Image 1 (cartoon, one colour):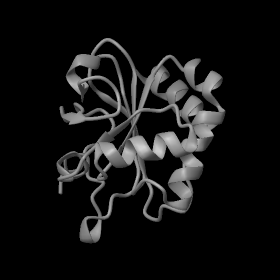
Image 2: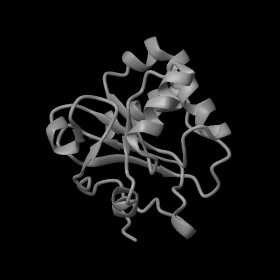
Image 3: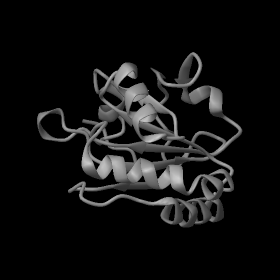
Length: 154
């Protein structure tokens, strides 16, 4: 399993997602990107996390960063999850866990750890937080603070 840290180049990837085409990190150069890895659709904490992003939609838009959720479920599951909860953040499908592995968030037994990575416009990781136990999550306010720190450090 790889480990990427603040200051490293973000591992490039392309994944199917609930947006148009594929989510391709390289095509996002020039803008800030928040990668929100999470264990799974329809789980209690993940549902709270993405409902928080939905409820804080105006504040989330004000962050001037693209936020995308990444988990192992397929796009069909993601679309049901979005539909059932009225979610607003697009979700990418890392079914083979290659991206989770590249970012060092694949835990024992293929479990994905809840994690946030912020990638700057040049493709460098400016913020990294990986939860050892996924009982909490970074809410919209936490993302705002993390982006502020990341932008100051860039």
